[in-house]
Image (cartoon, rainbow, N blue to C red; front, side):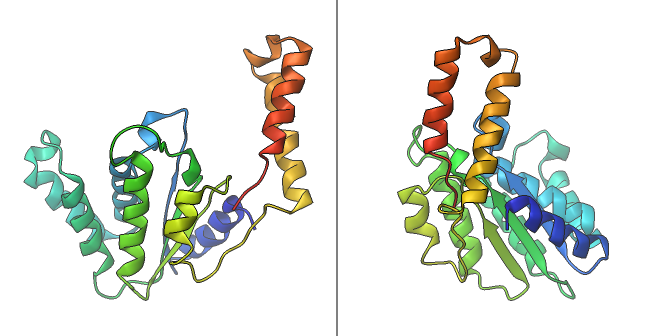
Length: 204
């Protein structure tokens, strides 16, 4: 089951008002989708859209920080999220962190990825019965596995799934041959890139 399928299934529950869902997709091409502050802000906003009580908490945070002119710290955002999760009479809540391997692991100490992993670890260790967390990664990265595997109650590896690999390879070929920049490359350069990326066509 891919992350898009998971999101589709949970969204059906949300649309029926049987659950709340907040998903965050990490994208190495977009700096606004690469760090823990962006992830927290997105989770808070999505929960607020689905709950009047959550919306009230976010509005209080907004007013407490000069109606948005003062940026809240990551700790304050995390506290607000915790307050939302502990509201009474809530149904199931699902968080999906998609493509966490696209979160940078090279700049800063701690790196953006380390901070995101700390957030997920913190959420998991809250042990809130109504909260379920799904994390996906295209690549099997040692730092991600070191943090998440001890926390996981269920894991799925698509690493050896031929159908999954074929889908990824097909997408790589399509992108290389349709993107305005890459389609201008020499044929041998395209083939080399497709070959190298296809070798990494694995997921966790």
